[in-house]
Length: 505
DNA sequence: ATGTGC
Image: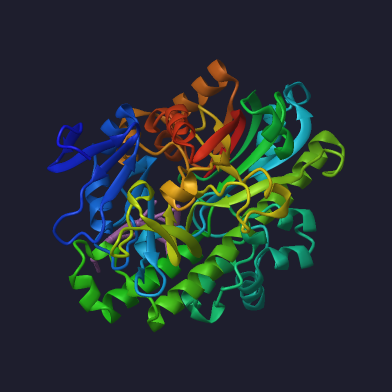
């Protein structure tokens, strides 16, 4: 970097341009690494608006943070650590931070294909949206597809989608097309509190509220025919997108361990600029307990999305009078976008063995890292062993939901992702307006009427306030987010979808 | 995100 590098300043934080779409906050003071923001000028203006950059810089104070803390193009402020943030900490002498995973553990997205076309669906929109709304529990509080007893919750936490398979809610093919095959073997249900388990008991198979939704979409654009073909996608096809997480159970796991870690590792907390970043040192009891409990909550969320998938198949069977197999309702993929995971990465190092960006490295070392992806999607390219066999030769599907008025994208993990973002890209459009501001700006029913009359999008929600909070205008431009991901080569465009029906809390 | 809050 030269002195003539282009710079920007937001609220006292200086960013230097490294190259197109790559900005760096240089390392100084108590920072253990620099930070990088991956964004276009337009997205950077929005990222500079709130506390995102301060939180990103704070994250570089985490012990063992490796190379840099990174903010994806959809980044915005979160609890302690930006949503859209990626922080890779050394698994041996670093730390793990619940705030860098997020409250909604394994919030994620899955896409289910159908062999229906938009024409097949036209005229059935009202019936479908009503039937899905009636059959898929949504909104705050309890009531799920399965009323689990204590043993059920234990089994779900331990076995994830293997439990769903054994109980007839999943097919083997579903497991083969899910990240981690729908089961984190590191799950340790004994480290999930009774309170968390009690909250999860009656929420198995429920959407929740906020930005969570079930959407029927049509494929409007295919950008890469060959990869779309290997994903089973083509223009005009109908697909289903499910976006939700681990409900009250994951929320309680996060709360429990934030408290425990704040208390148990006050010394580490003192060295951090924000209490919300509380972290447990790698190798400590609390690090292992949180990791085991978080993995169990991850399993819970996969079962949650699986039960909703099961119910969605039954609804389609009734409406289209054919069984789910005949309708081609296969899982394309399921991605987790709020997790931490132990992964081995090739880390660039300088002469002293200090981790540095790949372009400055004199050598690379294999290191085991806790990769925290909070509002960030794994985007592994072809060849990584974690990518399921079905996609190992092409790269993993990456699903990026936009707003209910804009539609979504399917990308494929990009060749640059391992070198630039620890194998990650964006997770959505990212908010530009707070929920409270949104409710002053929009009225739920008006939003619904406009979407229906102007765009033929049928929305049904438990609460009008939620529709206002999720109005298309509160989100960044998903096209711009994806353009940056594609240009950087971290996640490459494959197809685009547009909403037809949307149900939400 | 969340039986929405120290």
